[in-house]
Image (tube, rainbow, N blue to C red; front, top):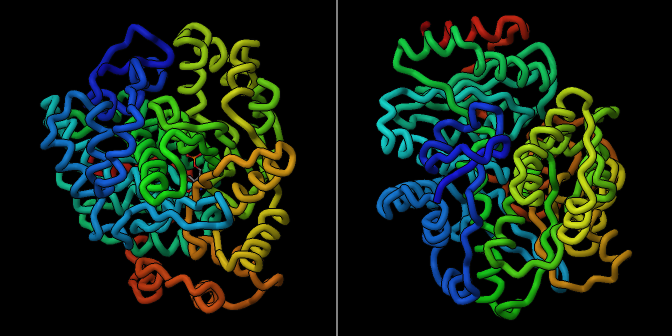
Length: 497
Ligand SMILES: *Cc1c(COP(=O)(O)O)cnc(C)c1O
């Protein structure tokens, strides 16, 4: 299996090269040249395996340059009860009849990003070894909260790597800030930026593409790599949990082998829902993929009209990990839907960069309608949904997951589609405790973050994840706050260049 670039179909690299490079030189994203297939019998047999082995089975189809031993080294280290709070790694909870919550947040940082970022460091270091890249890998991350912490936990103390995370000083939740400031590990760094997420991101991109910096790094035997979902190594682990969920539902007798399901995904960068699309096209029987957005509803408009237009107001919401106007992974979907037409992708994404807008052709519009449904909701509807499902089903979910539930309820009401449905639950409710508690109690309270956590625990009966509970007494290690103009110097100083 080789990988092409969405902006140049002639590019052909191995998975190890795709994972270490992160992004192709001309700015395209790596995609496998075909989508490997799974038969229904294979899917059924996966149900009897433990999660790490299901993952290994699927990786073997994508990472064909890895040996079986290499793949198992990665999966056994990533998907174990040392890192995850539950044996099954991804839990499936029953919400109501025929509707299942795929809980992807039982990892060390309590958000679904762990599903990929626990394994990415093993993929990266294994890939580097395979292609004889004798360099220390330096991971730079700009984060609006969840990715940064998940990447720190994934890369901490991983030999041959170091990681440096930048977050907007006033742009993350108090819990997310504490998680990052107290980060342990000998190869980690965390720094706040006086600015917003875009400032952090622009700074990181400028450092990545600065030739002088790259040369200095090279002279010291180091290279940059990316932990964002533009890296194929982050996407492929996400395909696994959709296949796994289907296999488990069959095994548990909830669905018949071959029966179609819907999958609902709360979406920002389009990574998680793209993984569901891959699972479908590998052979998991799927009826509709339902794309749920908050009030930053650029994707809802896109799926419904075929026009992608980022020229709009940006809103800060209670589901901040979906506050995004440029969904990078859409490029991979459109590459497939155009029949791998790299010229069209260059044209559309060129327009996105220059005008902030592009419109796809009639063929792609029809395909989008056939595969996807889309909807969005605002903050008050998000909180009302948390409240309603708590009252009705005694289930407490986080704000991102609530967006998905609300969009699904709307979908069901308009379409009367009764297909059994899996909803991706992307974060623990404790991670966004202020909004969740306000939704549960129907009012704002003045108590501090940890007391809010305690209150949610009383109401929900969900145990507080150990990783969040212990934060209260952990010493802060990282208190640097810098101006956005100082980011490059900060990186060079930290790496002793
Ligand atoms: C990152 C994130 C999302 C959005 O996922 P994408 O892959 O960017 O679409 C949704 N919910 C939570 C909690 C997240 O951290």
